[in-house]
Amino acid sequence: MCGACGRTTVDDPALGPVRTLRQHLIVAGTVNAVCTGLPGAPKVTALKDGWMMTGPAGFSAQCQTLEELWVAVLGCFTDASVLDRLRRRRQAYAADPANAGLPARAAGMPPDPAASNYFQGDFE
Image 1 (cartoon, one colour):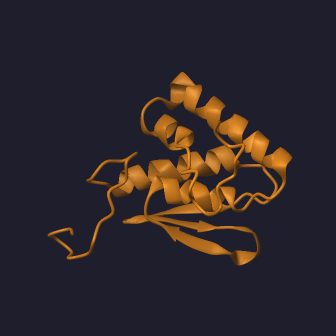
Image 2 (spheres, helix red, strand yellow):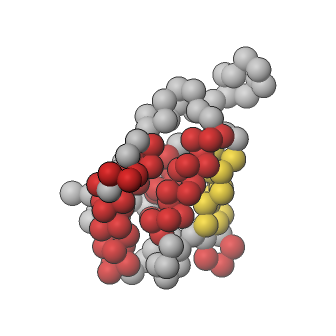
């Protein structure tokens, strides 16, 4: 729980125990950059305690960890070829030296295979 606001905070393995709005903005920008131009791409907005992902037809999900965010984003794509393009984009974005640090970690964060909307071909 955060002592300043009294709200429960969720530890994010990718961001650590103390998260900032700046980190959330970087992650939102990364996810939006990776998904740009793909059919059915969602829009991710940074919140002070996570992200709001808005998908096609107005579907939205509030996510508190990077893993939850990627699971929600992957759930927006139903076509296997588009998911494969997204996977390749994520890998290329994470490998690009210009995206070192948090953007590379954000793009390369694999979702948990036990998550409900996990796409089996995303990370092998």
